Image (cartoon, rainbow, N blue to C red; front, side):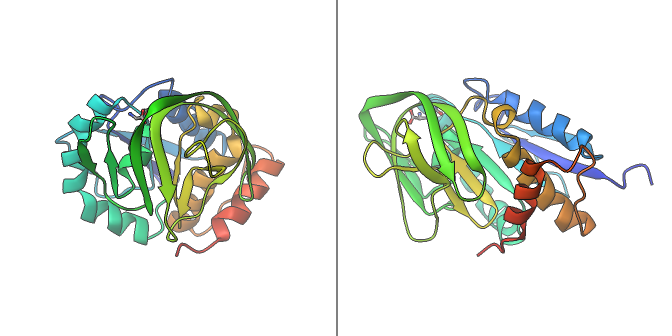
Length: 241
Ligand code: GLN
C-alpha cells in the first residue's frame, strides 16, 4: 500500500508560534523520517483549523507573548483532544512559547494569565530578565543536547513531569534550579530553539521511533543503525505515565 509507511506530523500554530528558526524542527523531522523510510504528511494546524483524524507526531515552536495570546484560547479549546493523544502515547515536542502553554499556565510579566492545557506539570511566570544564549544540557534519554534560548518566562516543574535534562551551560527552565525542559510520558517540552532537531537527531529519532512503534508495531532505522537511533529506541520503550 502506498501509504503504508505514512507518518502524520501536526505542526502546531506555525503562523503564530514560529520563532528563532523553530520551523527548522519540522524540516529536520520530515527529512529524518524519510531517511528512515517513512512518508511524512505534514498538517499545519493554525487557530480554527481541525485536527486530522489520525495524528502520529505533534510539534510546535515558540513565539512572543503576543503570539501566545493569539493561540491560547484555541489551544485550551482542544485540551481534551490533546490529552487523549498524549494519554495514548503520541509523541509531542513543544518549544518555548508552546512549552509554556502545554503547562498549566503562563503568567506574563505584566500580570496577564494565559491558561495552558496541562499536559506537562509545569507553570511559568514572566520575569524581568531575559535568559538569552547558547545552552548545553545533559539528558539521560538523549545524551548531550545543545540549543539556544531566549525567554523571560521562568518555568518550574511539579512532580508529574521530569526535566528533559540538567543544564551545563545556560539557564534552561529558570536561572536557579539547573533543570531544562520537561517530559511527561512521550510529551517533551523545551526552551531550546536552535533549531533543536537539526542539532540533536536523537530527539527526532525518539519522535519517529515512538510514532512508528505505535502505528506499525516496530521501528527499524533504515538510515544506518547509528547510536542516536539506538538511544532513541531505548527512550521510546519507556512507558508513558
Ligand atoms: N514569551 C515567552 C517568554 O519570553 C516565550 C518566548 C519564546 O518562545 N522564545 O518567556
